[in-house]
Length: 63
Image (cartoon, rainbow, N blue to C red):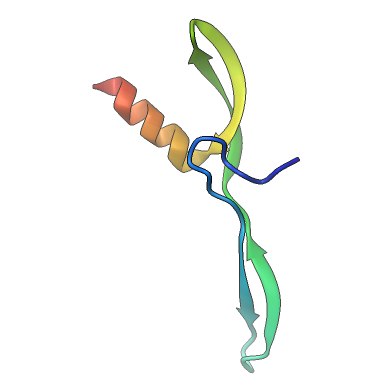
C-alpha cells in the first residue's frame, strides 16, 4: 500500500539517522497516514490521508 497522501501529495522522505558518535545510517520518515470517513458527493467514503490534510479539511468546513 502506498505511503502517499492523495490530497496533499506528501510522501516519505529519507535522510540519515545520527548516533551519538555521529555515524550516519539511512532511514526514512513516513507520512502520518490514517483512515478517515469523509463525505464526498453525498456518500461516505473511507480515505487514507495525512492527519494534516484531515485537519485542513475540517478547518475549511467549519467556517
